[in-house]
Image 1: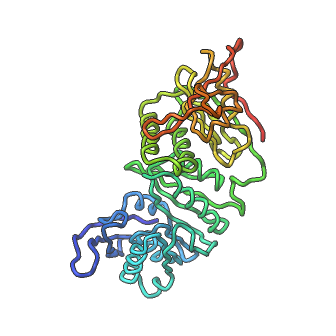
Image 2: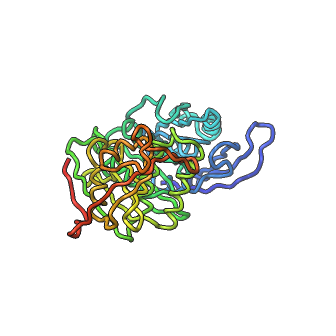
Length: 383
């Protein structure tokens, strides 16, 4: 278990590197790390990386992957601990600097146990018997990179091996790691960092279990963790729609999600897989239960009626006589099957498309008969 300290010592002239800092692994060993602008945390060891290393021990029994190695601090620590190490990064400059730091700081024997690979995630990594994989993914972007890292880590890890990740985002990572590995241990550190540790317990990812699913439908109260639900929406948007939207549209949608996280304005319905421990779908509606604002279903659960079931629960709560939605054009067919009709049908009957702030929608409406009984708050559907 490492205790990391660093000290930036200023620009280095004539060697092609812009920064250098001291990296103290333990009381008896300090390494000199060269780095440069363009690499992650060029002025010193990132606090998240330090937090991750503080909960991880290395030994000669380990085969370690430093995924997204940057200047190579994680890989150097593992090699100094006796492990066989692969340092990998999509950036060729990072791989080159990591190699330089390994050559300059490791003993000849330690250096002989280190490999260097320029790879986009796991694309060029062939070893599938790692005992430890460590990564500090870019938490300020969408979740597509983290998703690939987590799923790829499971496929490239020996049974009994562990994945270590650090980020400032809690709920999405906790749910995703649980869905793939079947469980996760979370360490909360200062400065808002969370370190996640998941162990591979078998040969099949948990989210591909043949045990089926138990979908529970919930209408949440005001005390719901709405950020968790909005993280799910944001992730599914980035995985399904974002690529086909304009830059302006993506920005507008992102601002909507950001604002909703700060100023709760919606009621939420959730489809939750109680077997796999993950969200399968989310519907957000205005406080008056009259306008569908967001409806997203995990594509792994497509064609199982989850979106329709979420709408049916909302319809039971609707007391104003009807529901409206500004449907994304690709979703018009779904809403037509659910009984919605375009407010302005247009020549093809599929509705005229409006565009505002880069978002293209079709205004639709469904008349709802008033309920004479109070609806159930939740239900489950074994599928």
